Image (cartoon, rainbow, N blue to C red):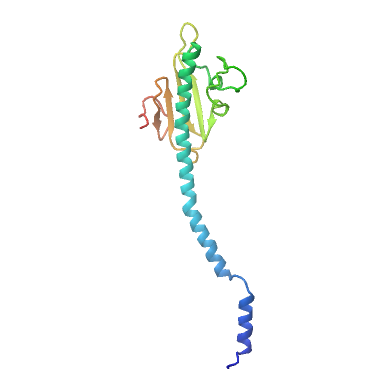
Length: 171
């Protein structure tokens, strides 16, 4: 049997007891960075899509709550989003209708700001129509689309600026 050179034997012992080399660690870090570079934009796009879908659904919820408020209380449309919400304690009233949740009644939800404006008032002091805009809090991060709805409950969309009744309805 052939004897190993003492230098070679020492080198083999060192290799067996040493951990990962610097090159191996750099390769692993590079692979993780490539995976993150692929995954993070997809996660952001998924979050934006979820926020936009939530904004449309919240517009529908507010429009439905307005119709219920109008028919239940007979005082026109609500003067504010806060009136549509309110704590769930006690019986619903004209100033605490409990038709939408407390978070939505503040006007901020899922990366969108909801701006509610009651419009024309009749001779009895009741609002006969309203306008609702849903705009992203941070364009490109929390959402890309702007939404608008009013008493016919048709939701309009604009991808550049706050939506109006003149923008196309969502499909």
